[in-house]
Length: 375
Image (cartoon, rainbow, N blue to C red; front, side):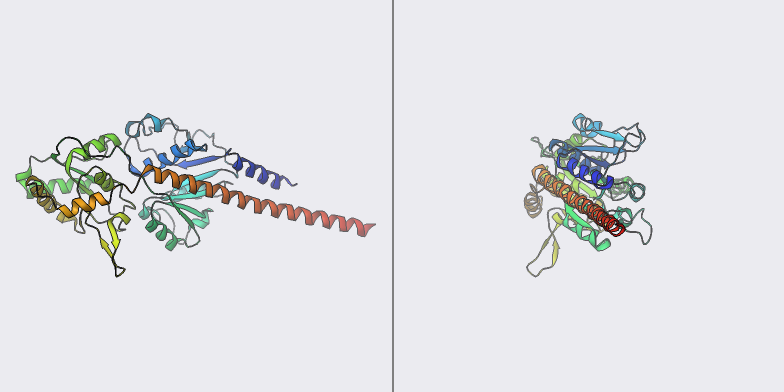
């Protein structure tokens, strides 16, 4: 057995025994709550519970982490920094890289580990990748997506990429308050300046509602955000490049109506297929394509709420949209998908090892034939 074949067989054994690493690369949010990072931590937490060695991989040794906004349970998950130079990557290991970090993909392309891209924001896929370059240039053949739409978009860009879907889950602590709602509009926008403009425009156009608070949810811990949403009478959401839309679903779970700008990629929970096969927007929120129209929509909904005359269709559709994205569904998908990655990797390494064995056997036959000729 050649050295190369032996190393491959040993890697397969490590895969069988779960003696390998799943390294999830992420950036330091510096204490800011980010849904994409939260989802990565959920994967790491679930995989460790399943007996895998899943690790959060970050650049600097000094890492603020997620304790302030996700809790100590998540902060205590295994972490490793590239700066510490303790990372040892082998053929049985996996590196999971968010879609935006093309530079990171390039840096690890020659490592023997399996590379997987995690796609949560479709608009970031091409942000830092050069023209004409595909994920295949980085040795990436697999991707994890959160929705079917995201999967289809990835395949439209990189047809040879295998995609697996692991849905996002909405934590159970997003629920309605047992107290009456207060005249407050929770707002979340990817661009903080957009949120500020909406707030300023609303107060200028509708000064009669100056007593209504419009606090930003950005920067709050997940529990604080849940509490804020749960007691608010209304929420506003603007995220043009969202690939899923966690915030509005959190609001629906809390029973809080949402006014939002329809993203460029319409989320699966926001549309349905009619009998004629066409896609239509579901009335599970007040959706608009006009950002400048949001202050007026806020004013109209506030008036309806104050008069106890909220649109029943929206309330009913909102309730119908809840309960779909549970931690049980996500964790089941995590268990299934990562087991599939491991099995596929075993087969892949097995095929390469067999090729080495076949080449070695041919060489032995060749040498034997030469010896016979000499005799």
